[in-house]
Length: 252
Image (cartoon, rainbow, N blue to C red):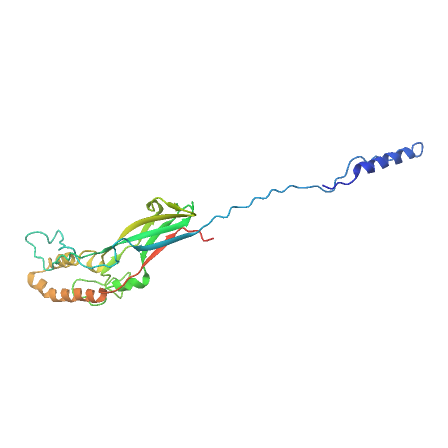
């Protein structure tokens, strides 16, 4: 630290004052060291650099092949059509391979000790795939157009409701080196859509036919057969895409 030489200057002033004693009077006194600069200690603090590495992977679980079989596992009957006095015009063979859900395996890999408490995983049907499930204008029996959400169609044959998996379902992390891994599975389901009032087709048609006399009901059967075949044409061997997204990641 550099200081002005204040003490030396003060001594010179005292000497000068002694010279003028007996003259016109005492000179003014200038007392005090003048410090014109100083040192300032600055303590530096630098934030830690934290790794925000995170990756999500999705695959079919174990023997899962990601294939759906759009069918009824057994004849579905509503309460109205299950009584002994009711006639079931539409029945299901009970396809043993019917499968309307898929089991997905997730692996989330993060930097070691990364806080995932605000993370979640969302599963949604890709917008480009939504059109595959829409029933086109081929309806001739009991269907009405879905005016609000999709006026060009009669609703959907099959529906998928988006799913959110919270961090509490990630399970315990598995540390390995500088990484933590979370592995978990989630079964997601496709359901019958608004075209069938969210019911299995046999239940939907039997409930509608129950309100008709037998002759009128039989007159509808060819149209129902045509509608079901139209669904097969629309859906058979199609591929739909599910979007998997890890939410809550700080990309700043």
